[in-house]
Length: 192
Image (cartoon, rainbow, N blue to C red; front, side, top):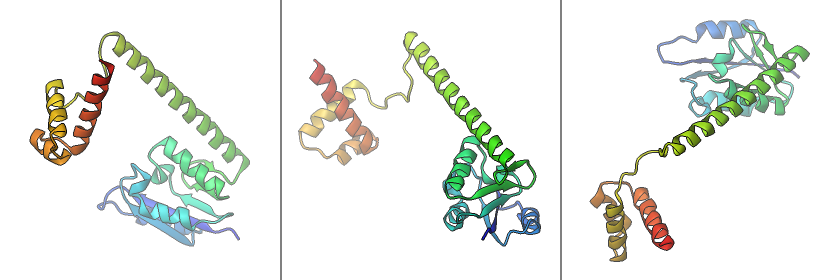
């Protein structure tokens, strides 16, 4: 039996869900999951997670607009694919996005190919930019918080039996930074 399951989301506590709820009820949703979260990541949306656990094969998830479900195309495609693998369709009331129809599934696949193309182009541009920066003598990433002399001191302190936590306090850095400094120092000494 097909169930119409609604999902509504607003970004802030000040915004009101009522307009979305009215549209979803009018569309025949018998159960509606509601989130008040920014929507930047799926982790922020606990009700969406509950919806994904709740839906069953044959159900249709209905949203008023696709941006209520996701802010990014890639996240939207991932969610729609996840629903599709469960045998669940997706319908947007205010946009022509409906995976219950042949045309809707075709549009979804075209959107997926465009998103994949864009991801690949971003990756290529990133690699080109990194190569160009290296050719000019620049290396990406965050600057090191410790100098080579400090790393040598850290190595000596550790050899003398100081704990990583004590050393981290001395240099006012995280314990992980001390661990990475020790590894770098050992690698550089091994190469010499």
